[in-house]
Length: 71
Image 1 (spheres, rainbow, N blue to C red):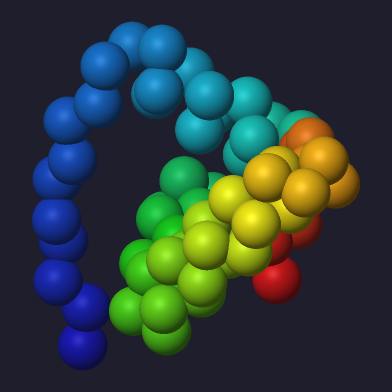
Image 2: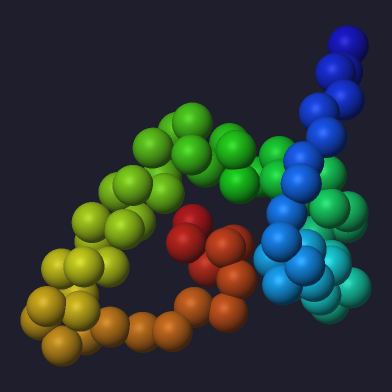
């Protein structure tokens, strides 16, 4: 069973999500947010941030084009 949750975003963030979906990275806006929430719940976002900070401090930083690249 699903529950609908409404989310309010600033226009710039809403446009970013729309662009990501239009580029085909996610099937829908809902799928984008489900994946984002799964990553957060699994601790992947925090561990990715810690690792990124280490890479940046060591001069090995890289630019990611999507959240999927964090996997």
